[in-house]
Image (spheres, helix red, strand yellow):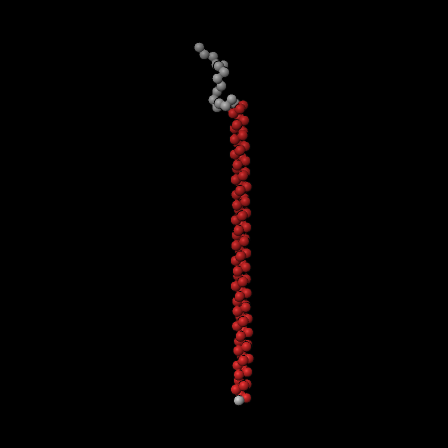
Length: 98
């Protein structure tokens, strides 16, 4: 009978040790999964930040183009005021003819 008690105690000790090992392994694996999740989230945020930066640069470029276009339109408008709005010669009748 003492042998069976001792055997049961040893089995219990082995089972407890095995249980701790499995628990530690599961905790370790869960930690690795969580770390991978954080890394993916970081990469996602970096991608979004880069996309926002590209969009901001494109918006600045478009705004610059719009200002340049508006400037050209203004210059063209002023030029037509000073030239009388015609692109050809004037009709002042200064030439000599018959």
